[in-house]
Image 1: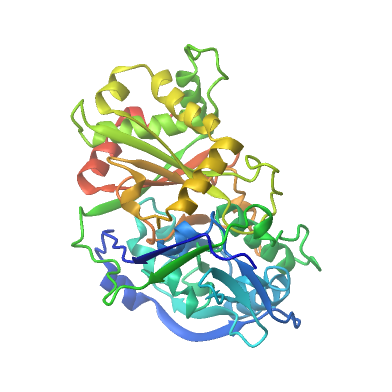
Image 2: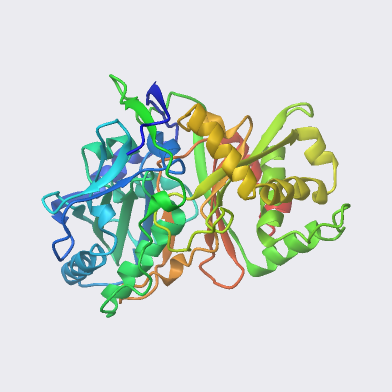
Amino acid sequence: MQPPTTSSSVYVSISSSISDSGKKDEMSKVKIISTSHVKPGKMIGRKECQLVTFDLPYLAFHYNQKLLFYKCGEFEEKVEKLKDGLRVVLEEFYQLAGKLGKDEDGVFRVEYDDDMDGVEVVEATAMEIGIEELAAEDGTASFKDLIPYNGVLNLEGLNRPLLCVQVTKLKDGVAMGCAFNHAILDGTSTWHFMSSWAQICSGSNSVSVSPFLERTKVRNTRVKLDLSLPPNPVNGDANQGPQLREKLFRFSEAAIDKIKSKVNSTPPSDSSKPFSTFQSLAYHVWHHVTLARELKPQDYTVFTLFADCRKRVDPPMPESYFGNLIHAIFTVTAAGLLSANPPQFGASLVQKAIEAHNAKAIEERNKEWEAAPKIFEYKDAGVNCVAVGSSPRFKVYDVDFGWGKPEGVRSGSNNRFDGMVYLYQGKSGGRSIDVEIALEAGALEKLEKDKEFVLEV
């Protein structure tokens, strides 16, 4: 076993400033009935897998939260079906039933043993909350208590499950709130797991695509991190910064086509490829958020995206690679340049940043990080930033456990900061895209009134 190449010592403390208006009222609507644990359906034995350079920066994030809600009845029957399917799917995705640990050199790893608790499953009722209320376009206050592990840091996976699922009986359906430890998996792996679980519950005998669990095939540098929780962790203190609001903006196929057509109306000057749907929408959001913030022309604004590196690394990794295989990619300009230039200017910045992040750039970034490890915190996303996570490529509306497609898919209140954006496949299908945005309240109000942004085609 090679010794760790380097070590870093740091306290982990991240605060959130999402508005909790109305939260006390909502809390009284959600009642916890029971908590249990689900393990893989067969004995697996002791398994250990080192966390790699792509995983470690996310130890100081909070658990990644997703909410799916369905119109259906027979709650108790659904819960049992979910648990039965979970036992089967965990036989392949057993790392989610484990815990974080450290080896004798202090290198973080994910550990599984048959005597561990497994996945936490919480059953709850919220008979005053209906599907229509959850499908509304405003922020997460109304469903914060439908998702577990609010304000819980990934580092706490040393002492608690790496996945917690809360199944809540609603007035006219079921809500599934999931909290995944982001230090062990990214969005691609999250939705691979969710779709596999749904397949089993819908009648499949086995997972159609097994997870590729050998993280060290992509990177095997051993990095020791002396991480510890702060003496008094600050979680969700609304006084720690600007008051944030969230909103879901739904862009129809026609709106997406209009945005893409406008950005591509003048070809890039250096005869590069046409701008993709993502690059066009990225510019559209960045430009209009920058206007809504009323920045001075000389103020810098950063655009950040979390890019999937599975096909970018050399050698490429399979789509089924289970873990984090993402990098934050940044580009920056002055607010005045972004607003004064045609759309091609901003879209080109995004396009060039993405195209430049090839295998060589990834290798250089990893070596730089390993030489001086830095735990990622929200403020590192950049000044006046717009940061895009998730992807409309994820088939979130295909997650059908046997009682129909979800009525909605949303992100929880964890990992939110001013300028955080989540993109989802639109519920209406096709090329439609849902855009979840968290912004300082005043800026979001201006964005809502910006007809050039909303594009009600």
